[in-house]
Image 1 (tube, rainbow, N blue to C red):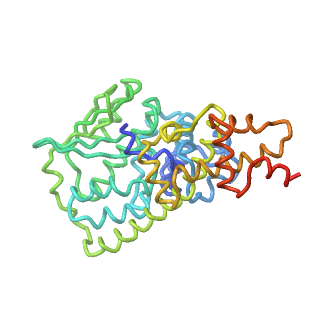
Image 2: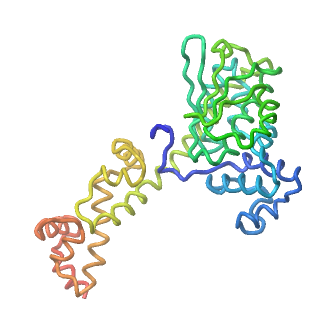
Image 3: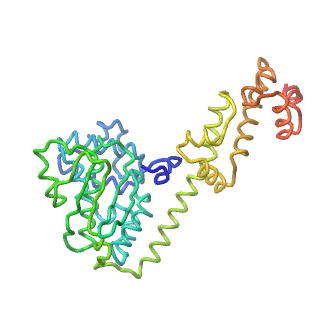
Length: 345
């Protein structure tokens, strides 16, 4: 998927409410939360009561584990069928206040991250046709994930419309499993998807974007959108608060290998260099500031080790010359590194 669609610097999470359909579908097939915890290697009580959030990797593992325990080759479809308004957290309420489906798709692309970090949505209109693409953050082998997402969209879309929507021309990246079970896809989606596709795409008539949401309370939209935006800002602030620490760790790992560059650290974090610099700026920092702080902290540790010469320390900190290290250390501490080492002793 395009790198800008998903921020790898943020810890990938799934809201606890998004897990509820998984537990319900598993329970309907005789798989208890306790059995699921044990099979997935989770501590007892991790799933009941429902956690506020959980790592995205754990969610995907639970989805696949529940399918295996239930012996259900279409577990993802059955999870999607249990999607409710509360599954999508506050962004589900935003969708319910949208005037039409076009606005609902726009809000999905904006706010789906409030429910999960499993993937991201895009929408493109080509004349009379529209393509909704879901860019999964997980390989196509996790077919229950893609099935649950598109089945959930189908169920929730029908609920918003107050009627059964026309079947979309659905393409899925996974192989569809045993062809003998493809009737279940027909039942849920109204048409058989095309499997082994290059991307997960639902293509439909663009005119559907103008369909009204019949029970929408559009008067609530500004209030709900304001609340959703506040949650996005809180999410961004939490991520930005940790970006300096992530950069610090990446710098420490790379320092002994030579000079540290913005591009190399950005690559380690799965970000574009400009994006990394912007995030540091949002957090009230800069790459050079974090680099200096990391070097200063390491320099003090190294200077406490009598077996390391100043030349050795300069090399370990990524300096080509001892003089450059000495000059920098004087800027940080107000004294030469040799004097600091002596004072420390």
